[in-house]
Each structure stands twice: as structure tokens, then as C-alpha cells.
Length: 174
Image (cartoon, rainbow, N blue to C red; front, side, top):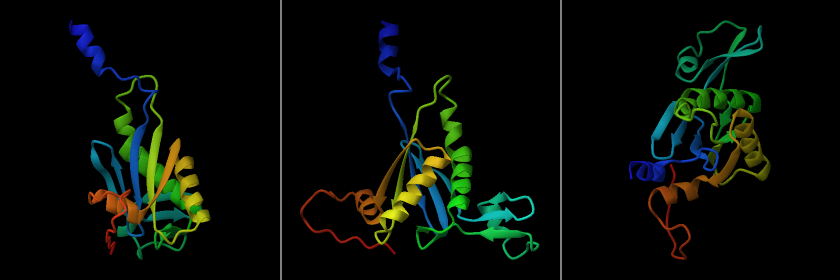
């Protein structure tokens, strides 16, 4: 009887994906995990060393040293107005975010890690090419499946509105 009740709770990791939600903002980037909440909230800043061609500082650390660095170290903001401005920098930043925020939750799976399904928001003014760039950046940083959602739709769904209803709803995203 004990074994049967435990089998109901047994999940095979390769049949279900691990959902992570990305809010790639100009000022802050937030990463949330389904049923865990927001696990990563840091400023969208990177420190790039031109001598070694390496990204050295991420998030809060890079923001605090802005304006106090030598000439060979530059502080980069890879997202401008919600649109991807520096592809390589954003890939490194997302890799940093996934490694610090999502990988610890994947350690519970011993042998086979589930694929990461990333859901990201884009502003409604983003073109198809800009959406594709965000999708590619997430895939290069470790996500296996990417879904892009317009920010207004995500905000309306988060507020509890039925986004499939024919009734008009007013959503203001400031």
C-alpha cells in the first residue's frame, strides 16, 4: 500500500519540462519558476573587460561600479527599451541568471535533468526579428524550448483577466 501511494507522487523528469518565466527589462531582469515565484531579480548590467574579452561583473555588482572603472572595463546594458541591443552580452547575462537561479532547482533531479521551457515577454512594438533574437538568446543560454508572449497579454493574464474573452479590457503598463 505504501509503495502504491508513493508511485502516484513519482514523476519521470524527462516527460515534463521545467518552466521558467523571464522578464527581460531595461532596468531589471526577473526570472520566476513555476510554483516557486521570483528567484532572480537583478539590474540588467554587465561589466566587459576589453583586454581579456570576458564578461566579469553581472547585475548589482556591475551597476555599483558604473562610472568608477578604468578605460578597458566597460559597463554594458544589453536591453534598451525592452528590445535586445547587444546579443552576446544578453546571452552571457541570461547564462549567469540561469546558472545562479535555475540550476540549483535542477539539482533535485539525479540523472536526467528536465528541459528548461522559457517563457519570455516582449513589448508589443517589437518586430519579428527582435522577438527571434530574444528567442535565440534564450536558447543559446540554456533553454530548450522558448515561448514569446507580448507584455500586455502577460500583464492582463497576470491580473486575472480572461485574455480569450471578447469583452474589452483596459491594461495600462507603465
